[in-house]
Length: 104
View 1: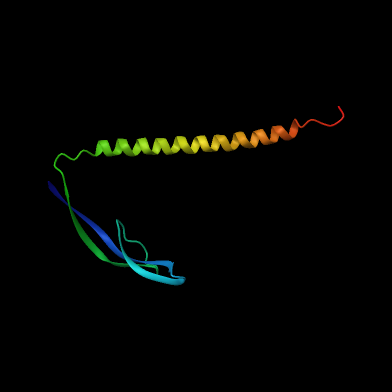
View 2: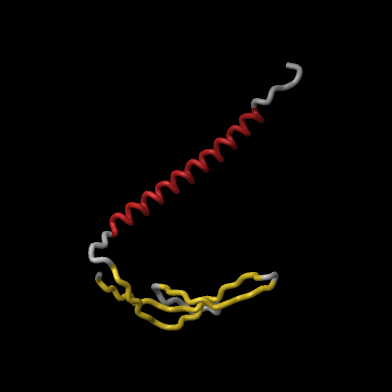
C-alpha cells in the first residue's frame, strides 16, 4: 500500500429539512477541492490534509472503463426515451391530420 496525501478544504455546509413536521437545519462537514467565496450557508473552516492508502497494484483504467460503460448506457437510455417522446408526438399529430371525416 502506498500513502497519498491530499490537500483540500474543509467547509461547514448548512442543510435544511423537515422532521416530525418541524423545519430543521444542521451543519454538516464538507470537503471540497477548491476554496471559493464564502456564503452564509457554506463556511470555509480551513485547509486540511487527508491521507489515504492506495493499493500498490491499483489500476484506474478498469474503473474508468466501467464508468464510461455506465455513461454510455445512460446516454443510450436517454436517447431512446427522447426518440419515443418524439415518435409519440408525431403519431398524435398524424392521427389528427388523418382523422376521417363523416359523410365521405
